[in-house]
Length: 587
Image: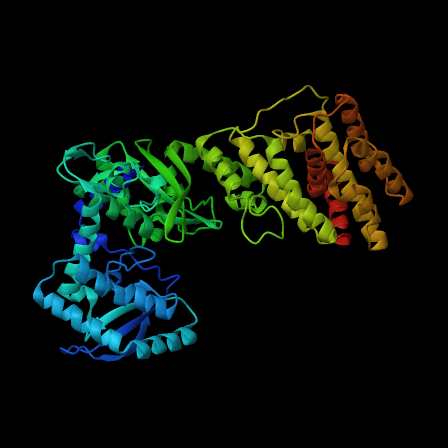
C-alpha cells in the first residue's frame, strides 16, 4: 500500500502538483475541528510590538500561510502555529518554546537570530496580556481555534526566516534518525541517505518496544528506512488521500488508494478522482448508486473501470495524534466492486422504496447495548466489511444475535409503533445482499410445493428448510391475528404469547394452535388463513424432529413473517380484501 501512496504522490508532483518541498511538508489544518484562527498580531517594526488578537476563518485564503506541521505532543511544532487547547499551555509550550528550540537546535544567520530573539522578548513581555486576550476570544467563540503569528501583513509563509527555520527543524529531525548507504524500503534502491520515513504515525520511536535497533531511538530508521525522494512522494500522496480520497463510513472513515498496473491509466482516472469538482463529473460517468451515505463516494465510478488497477481500502483512526490502522483491505479489483453493486441492485429490485446501503449493516453492529457511550462493535462491522469486499464467507449464526438484539429492543419498548418491523426488513435486506454475494453455505432440502413458493423463492437463500418456511408462515399468520385484535379491541393482547421474541422450539411449535384458536374466537379464521395454517402444518411435519436453529434464528424468521405478512396476504386474498385491511389497520 505504501508503494501505491508513493506512486500517487509521484504522479501529483510530476503533473503540476505541489512541486516544492515546503508545500509538500506543510500539513493542512482541519477547519472542521478548528474553524477559527487566532492571530497574534505584531507590528512590522524592529520592536515587533504586540497589537492584539485578531480572528479569521481557518484556511482563508489558504492553508499554507501558517506553515503548520505537527511536532511532538509534549513539545513545540515545526513552526509557531498550534492547535489551541489551554491558552497558557499552548502559548508557552507551542509558541514561546518554538523560539527557544530554534535557538538551541539550528545554526541561524545573524539576521534571523535577531528577528526571533526580538519577537520572543516581545511575546514574553506581553505574555499576560496575550493569554488574557486569547481566553476572552475562546469564551466568545466556543469552538476550536488555531493560534499563530503575523508580523504586519505577512504570515509565517511570507517571512523567509520562519520558512528557513521550519525546513531546518524538519531536516534536523530526519538527521537524528538516519543512516547512509542503506536500502530504501519503498523503492528498493540503495541510497546515500535514508531516514525513518513513516509519514503515518503507526508507531512511535519514544518507546523502546517499537524500535528495531536494540532500544536505541537513533536506529529506529530500521523500522522503515525511506530515501529523501520517496519520503517527499509519500508526504504528497498522504496529502492527496486526506484531501481528495477520504470518505465517511458510518462513524468511521476510510481512504481509497488506487494502484495501477498500466502506468498510462494514471492520466485517465486520477485527474477525475482528484479534481475539486469531481462530483459533477462522476454524476455523468456513473449510475449514482452508493454503498454508503457519503455523497462523495467514488466506488461506483471505480467499479466501471477495467481490472488493470487495484484498490486498497484503508480504514484509519486518529487517537491523540497517533494513527491506528483499523482495517486494510488490499487488492480490491473493479470487477469485485461490480459484483457488489450488482448484489445491491438485486436487493433494491426487491425493496425499491428502501435502497440497500452499508447503513443497514451498521444499524446492528454499532453498540452492543443502549447504555454504551461509544461504538464497541466497530471490529465486527469492519470484519463484515472486509468479508464483503474480499468475497469471504460468513456464518448466519454470527449475525443473528446482533439482528435480534436490536429487533427485540424495539419490539419490547414500543411494539405497536411498528419500528421493529422496519428493522427486521433491514436485517432481511442485509441477508439478501450477502446471499447474492454467495457468502453463506446453503443447505437446500426437498420440500413439497405450496402456493407460497413465490415468496419463499424470493428469499430462498434463507428459507432453505421446511422449519424456516413454517415459522415464516406462522409469523405472517400471527401478524394477521394481531391486526384483527387491533381492529376489534384497539389493543394486541396476544403480544404476550410471543415472549418478547425469545421463544424456544417447543413454544414456537405450540404457537400455531393458539393462533388458530384465537382467530376462531374472533370469527376471523377464513379460507385464506386456513390455507396458511395448513401449509405451515405440512412444513412442520416435513421438518426433522430436532431443528438445528438457535433461539435467535427461530425468532428472527418469526419476525420476518410478521414483517412481510403482506406478501403472503397478496397470495391468499384479493386486492380489494387487502385494501380493506390496510384501511382498518394503520400499522
